[in-house]
Image (cartoon, rainbow, N blue to C red; front, side, top):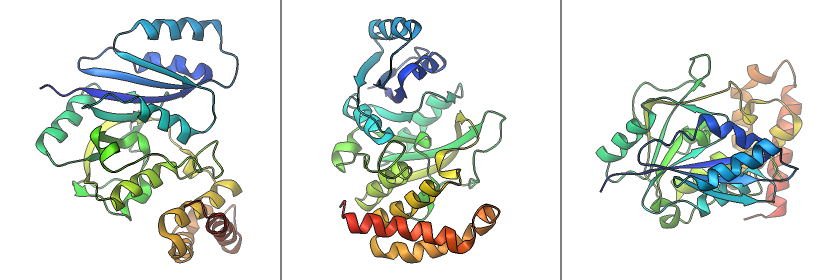
Length: 273
């Protein structure tokens, strides 16, 4: 049986118009769209939604609630059985041979649950530092993961009982961390996660996690607590020391550490788990 790819696309409001660069009706591809609508849609958007609903390769779902993790969970809920799923945003562009490369990786690795790969910026540079060789992901290496560089076998979601933690990510109680938590949950439950140095997708230069703001640093501390529990206090120290040169012009070491620790303590006190 020929493999099918299921793009799980999260979008919001009128940004759905950006999908015109993604939904190109490629062979063996199904597009699952989770559309958050929390403001009035333009006439152009309304017409485009009707066009999408008529497309036999599209599964369209609309939700009213907020939060990136909530949107991603809705996309997961509407995934197509037996496919290779690719998590997708509304502001990316895939390379012409991207889907063929993903299929090839899963075909040659029959026990593989998750595949991670490279993101390029629109200017053609690597989105972050990547290794040149393939390797099995570890808890440590997953710290740099971004969810648009992840593909997986559809059945892995049910097999490992996975979903995005809706306390994390833009629109959640903590403003970052939904990607890392999703992948570390998979890792802890025994999923096979392989990195291959494949150029798959293009994205703008900076994601939420790279922004230096109090709520982002606070959220990072909470994220570490979600994954590492009380060990997060040591992780905070290690992270603050390692990344000092990235924030020293904006934050002192003590202030940065304070925000990380406050985030960890806030999460542990609330007892979300």
